[in-house]
Image (tube, rainbow, N blue to C red; front, side, top):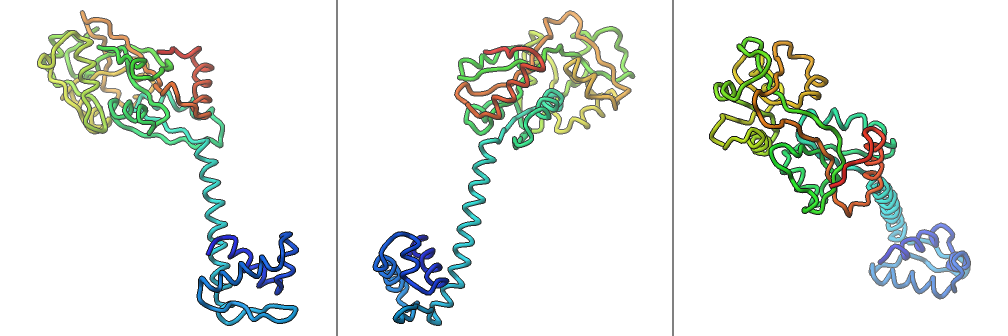
Length: 302
């Protein structure tokens, strides 16, 4: 039993004639009759009462027609849904990010994309989103780079588009006796925390290497909530490190935190890059890259 048999069966039941169905499909009456006989043999039941000029449904045939209508409707609905899903998938864009600051960089870019692009956003640690891009589970991801170490994305088969250049600063409570800048010695006196929604040492490693310090020199720990991090810093329980320009735009609700440069430290500049596979030809990704060109000049390719 196949789709064509079911469709022909429905037409015969509606028209009451093998001949009329045959004419509609430009085939012989014998071909239609043979298909219906094969269907009856497969079901092991008589579906039609064959008269001289007309065929009618048996009781079993009437029951089968009701079920056949349901089956064909389901097939048609499923076919339309699959086609719609396929159309949406061609306009789907998946983006990974790892910090609240990434959303500031992405928000306006995404808003400028065509309305028919279905954008999916996933938050994960830097190592996670980079792996997902490499595995084609994400079209692209925002990643901090050139801070402490260089990821060398080109060796992974990835390209990058420059989104933002910034400088790291230290957030400290106004209660703490810090003026003008934070010294390395002051960094040693307090816990230093950073936010990541999952286990990740990326930011810790980058921060320590940017200072030229080994992993034992400072107490750097991850917290699970950005809001909790801000509360601890506000109360003077810990210090934290932030992108200077983006924290000004993002955090306007923590008036008790002051943001200071690091005294006598090595270069604290870094970049936020959009990373993507060089062989990813998703039109939605190409449109996002075009928006990056418009917003910030030509992408910096790695």
